[in-house]
Image (cartoon, rainbow, N blue to C red; front, side, top):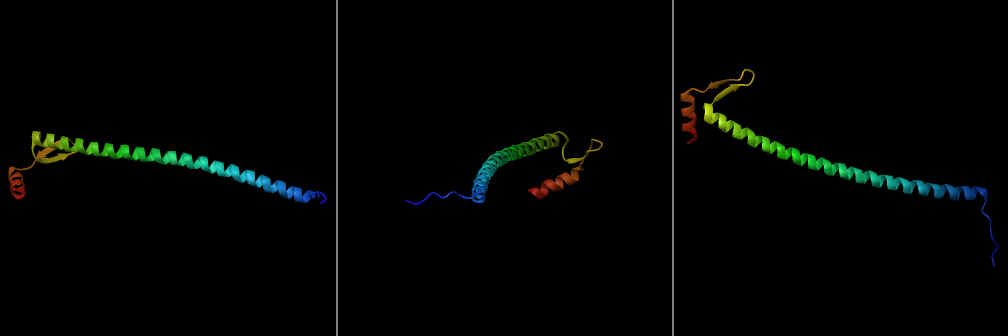
Length: 103
């Protein structure tokens, strides 16, 4: 039977350092995993926010088209000065030419 051998203090220190390094690495791997989960959640939240914003954008475009249609029916074709709020109707000749060209 072989005789027991006692590791030197230096060898035991190296073993302890290796074990501690493994523990630190495992801890870091766990922290990275949690960070990845949080990033995935943030990415999902970002996608949801983007989808909601795109939907709101499309809804606003629809509101704009409906408003313009209503204003055109009420005042006819023309130009609005946004700073003064003054609407200038297009002359009847321009409207007729535009209508003739689109037919």
